[in-house]
Image 1 (tube, rainbow, N blue to C red):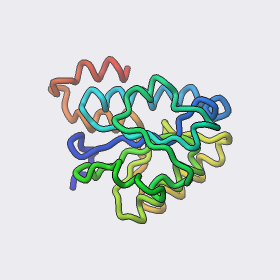
Image 2 (cartoon, rainbow, N blue to C red):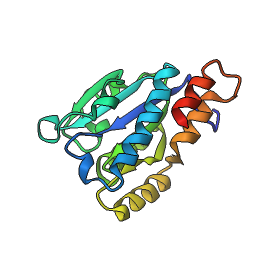
Image 3 (cartoon, rainbow, N blue to C red):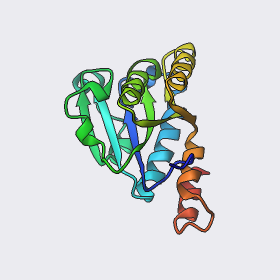
Image 4 (cartoon, helix red, strand yellow):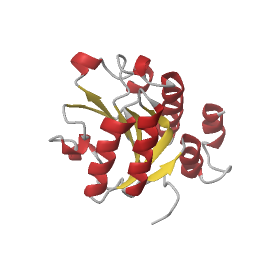
Length: 179
């Protein structure tokens, strides 16, 4: 197994980037921006994107520009998406490199990461595309996820690892999205 993110084995998991939640998230606009860039690169490279929504009737749907890129959308009540009946079916079996981003870092994102790790899934947590209302909660969540075996990455790390080379046929298109 490669230490680099592999586009052919990756799946992007977007946790609860919801309309009513994002305005109260510290640096929420930047988190949505980084998530959108990574989702656009994933779409460009035919990487499936599954998005979760925590009680969408209360928290609204996913931010529209990201929601339109989902391969699958999954409504949930559990904070840990992996504990929700039916979530496992959203994950493609040949896509074992799960790239996770979203909100809130210390609640739904962390519990999903921990749940996936308990199920022996490889998880990479995109640190510049996760957020909480308070930065201390995000910091604690990242530390705990790392201790549980999640790899900590940034959106640009993932995008360039997916591409691997400047000779990739979609490199120029991806670079325009990233820059």
